[in-house]
Amino acid sequence: MSASPRIDAAEPQTAAGNIPAGMKKITFMGFMALTGPLWGRLDEADGLPVMGFRVEDRHCNPMQVCHGGMLMTFADMLLGFTVGVAEGGRKFMPTVNLAGDYVGPAPLGSWVEGKGRLIRQTRNLGFAESLITADGVPCLRASGIMKIPAKDSREGDILSLFR
Image 1 (cartoon, rainbow, N blue to C red):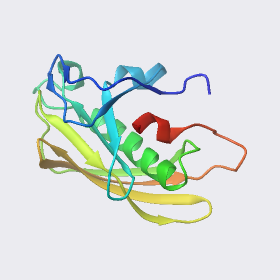
Image 2 (cartoon, one colour; image 1 turned 60 degrees about the horizontal axis):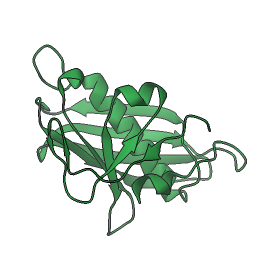
Image 3 (cartoon, one colour; image 1 turned 90 degrees about the horizontal axis):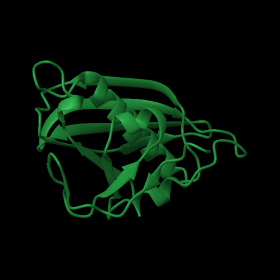
């Protein structure tokens, strides 16, 4: 894939504020480059991704709160990577369904973070969910169904993004 994401060395700060320890910057090309920077790591307990971003002006609606579209884009990435890592980390997962409930605001400057949880995996589909928080307070509950591609397609190295 020519538009593969790449990971940069961990950076301790962005213009908007500090980034939690252990997070590594994930840099994307194309549409995803417009949403970042996104940060990630693998959870020590289960090896699944933890991802986050600092809410900047460009992520906000006119009320200086993170736009719902940005939160759902973030959830899509998080849940896709969750299923991808659970599947072995060698495939990028297309989204079949994505649902979200906005449960609170993510104000300008807040740290938005989510950790995916794999609910079920079949031969062809992965089901995942996450409670995404802004400075530790829930802002989005999301669930997704991801298509597990055929063995010979959508190759990538998801695990390298988080190490």
